[in-house]
Amino acid sequence: MRRRLYYVMPDLASSRKIMEDLLLARVEESYIHFLAKRGTSMDGLHEASVLQKTDLVHGAQLGLVVGAALGCAGGLLLLFSGLPVERWQAGTVLGATVAGALLGAWVSSMVGSGIPNSRLRHFEAQINAGRILLMVDVPERNVEKIKTVLSERHPKAQDHGLEPRIPVFP
View (cartoon, rainbow, N blue to C red):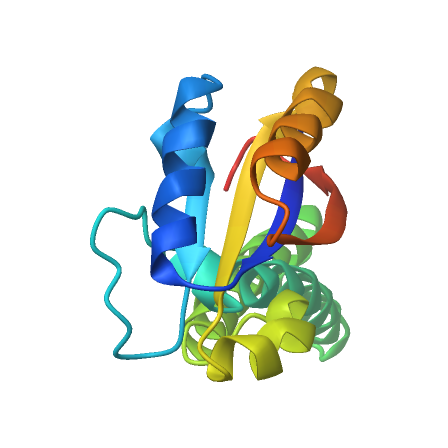
């Protein structure tokens, strides 16, 4: 399991330096994500992907649950509507539930891909002011080591805590 650390960097130069220090501390580049306001040069930094910038994942999760519930309700409604599906009762409800879950996840993820990440809402003001947000995912056993390295070498970096748990995907 990984934990996501959040730091706000004052400028591009300090962000590049912290990127180098994280790589020297053996954090893979794919676990380091930088987010800045649109139009900011991100040369030399690993920019955050769509998964970090948008609510795509949260939307898919929510759509999966809501879609499954609505699909199940639709399957039960189909059973009790009087249609002759006596042989396939369990299959009808299960099929409608799976179809609803898939459709809900797909539609909600499409909607979520156009919405900024709700977890990053409290960083908006700082990002709009020209600062750069660093999100670094580290194994739980290395959290204190990385926090120590960053606090010693980058006193201007503002520590904004960590997210409780990051699943293996994303």
